[in-house]
Image (cartoon, rainbow, N blue to C red):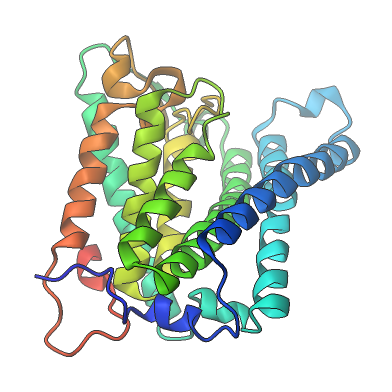
Length: 318
């Protein structure tokens, strides 16, 4: 068996290609500043754009308008993350943006694998919620609204791709290897995961269990990226996890409001410690169990016989 967080991991090798390596304090400070810029600047820009494109009240509650709103909010809110990280690695570290984990080795296979693993894990969470005695269900918008709901859901998927991948670029593409390459691999995993959890501390309805789960979420994705040696699969996993949770099943996402789901709308009952309550599955013990199992599978999976250079998780998606 083999733990993927080793000094010769591909992500750490890529990080060492930079001419200068930031200290842990600088790396944490840059991550925090980038988040603040994204939250303030990005949200202001998205509100202006939404006001210009969706000015009429009668459009406010349609599935298509929801999709446009999500696309604008996520894209304008998270593009600053890409720009900040790109500026740092290009101008200060003197290395390519691709060295954050976007090399060209089989990206499509890794995207498909990451999305499949995410859908499987979120399905396990949904089954756990469905087995609770007071969980209620409603028909999804795909069956009540039709094509407009599907188009809106796909627009939300595009926005979720930008948002989720932006978080992966910042936390797993940059912060994780920046610290792990200079200090210890486990330090990169721990710092990036804990900071990822704390970054959601101001979300509505946040709980201590929710922040713990999001730190476990970060740990899982850190190990996933290290095991793959890149970010393609991690970006796909994060995107499909969020989209399945909130858009497909209508569950609250890290404190964000629940919505009418595309496939169905799930309404868990009073078991908040299991379901996460208003914070969504991210705040419940059902998700804790699923994430711990996922971490265990990646952390102790058998290493291929060939010496690891940039391992993949394709087997996990079969």
